[in-house]
Length: 61
Image 1 (cartoon, helix red, strand yellow):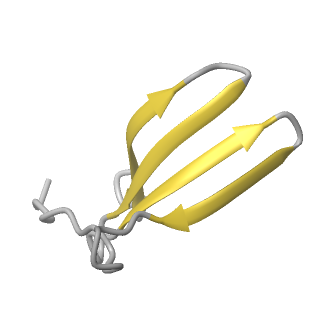
Image 2 (cartoon, rainbow, N blue to C red; image 1 turned 180 degrees about the vertical axis):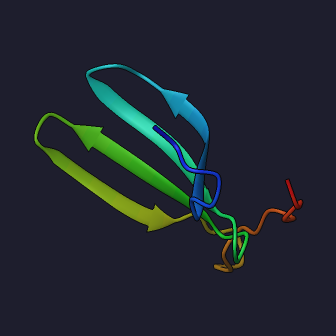
């Protein structure tokens, strides 16, 4: 069950057994990609073509 003050918000999800998700840090706006395949997984910031983190505008909700 999600709490109102959770720091991260999932904004994209694809797949079932092999899963790819995009999460946004609601304090900084930085986007992260999480990929899971079986028992392995990884998390990395999404970067633009200049190597800078992709940042989503933070809206107070």
